[in-house]
Amino acid sequence: MILSMTGYGTGSAQKDSLTVSTEIRTVNHRFLDLHVRLPREYLFLEGEIQQMIRKALDRGRAEVTVTIQNSAVTPVSLNSSLLKGYLEAAGKLKQELNLQDSLDLKTLLSLPGILQSRESLQPEDAQIVSELLETCVRQALEGVLEMRRNEGLALRTEMARILDLVADSTRNIRRISVDSPGEVLEKLRERLSQLLPEAGIDPQRLAQEAALLADKADISEEIARLESHLEQFRQLVDGEEKAGKRLDFLLQEMHREANTILSKSGNLEISRSAIAVKADIEKLREQVQNVE
Image (tube, rainbow, N blue to C red; front, top):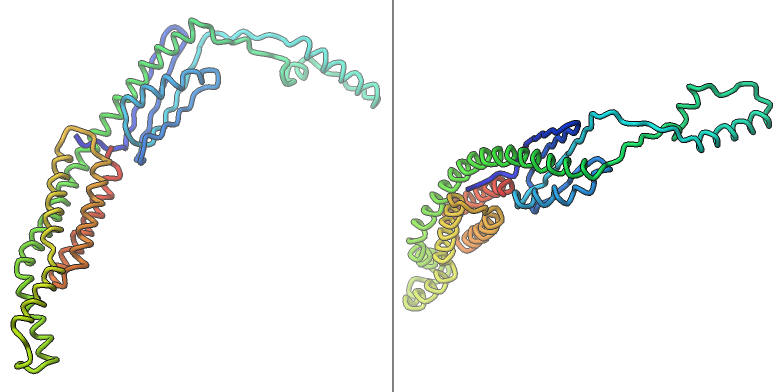
């Protein structure tokens, strides 16, 4: 089925003092572009997250934000050696500059590095975080995929409407092109009658020239290919597989056929229909840019 590349989902899981929360946002992108934000001490989990995302998504820019909180009391230690260094440096400054002020306890404790958190990631904590992360990433992905499916239904409806317009214009081109050889002959006769007296026109030569011109202006193959591309496009839109890249390729081919029809045909109504086809193809391209 058609899936949009726009999605959003969140997930949260908790065990003991550890809480893991995940937020995933996806937007359109030509390929799968992953960006994972993790607390520095948990960066080793990035590969695990990327693997889960790659299994679920094929295209799009995915921004994954992970928050990990530990409500347990964090032990704090005093860096005695660093404190002694500060005191020695302060004593030297006081003696050299003849200063009177002294360092109080509040000032000492506010110095960089004096108080250090002894929080460290224990092996059992790492395992718990990994399990919680898998749970909440799956929850977030479910939300993303649900939104992508809903957006995809809207895209499918709009693309089906535009496809009908392209099909109508293509049928109109085919209907008009049936009379093109006769029109070419008539235009050639009119042009030659303006340049040569009626008696000087060789009917056989006129027919040969008209046949050559009609062959050059023949758009039957382009129409057939355009109709074939339209049918393939419908099948992909209604199918079960992810088809964003193939839809984009088909639009390129449809645009090529419309351009050829426009350049080969001298019929004003065919030209108008071909321009309409090109305009609708551009509308389809805007939709397909957000299809996974």
